Length: 324
Image: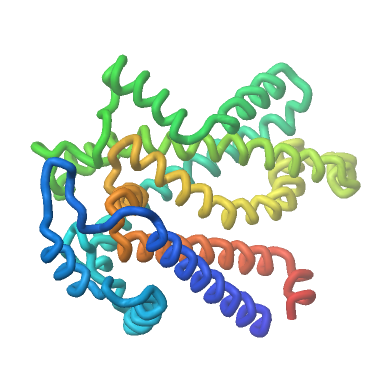
């Protein structure tokens, strides 16, 4: 088991390094300069040369890459060209917003998806199963940014039930330091979390329905029914317990979906998380911010996958035996 964990951790580190390396070279290969202002302004060539020397961009690309890795080994992510502050500080300010958005979406995803999947499996081929299955397929087929725009148009622009964007009211609640401001934060969080969570819940429901139907048809479930056990106990104790094993895999798969989807959702709702930070950095050619965001995101994705593997190994001892 220890050897298996060591191999998985080593593979995770290699994946993160590959993502950072690819991002570093791709963003540097993109056209544009991080120091060119808007068209209405102008910057002298001398100023551009001074800025390039200040941030080390006058060196060759391999030299910049080696220097970046050297600084990264010391825990330094560089300084933002646009924000004029350390990248680590900019990411630290953005990460809590992405974390709360992902956590809320994860709760919606798994709670609604699990409940719908169980209901559909128990009511197989009924009207409810067919209707919910088609609705789940429709929602799962919608891109997150499109669903976000639909929810924004319907519930914010037309009905005025929710705010159009941002994490809080900038006048009444510039900081979350009271109960009304906390409720205001959750009010602003609702639509972005629903956008991510509903798309994920639609896929989770279809996955869990198939897993539940497979378990219900097993011999031990029929034996439990033959013993006279109540249907609720048969479903919740015998069937659901074993149907949840594949569900653990979704925990790891949900991290990439939530983080990549958050880029679009945060842009639609002006949610100041890592996704919006990365999009603005790409447009402004803020190299170190883009690379730092890729580093943090890939680390979170790999960590989620590793946690899913560990949970699966705990739930199914046969994996520990094969992976030893």
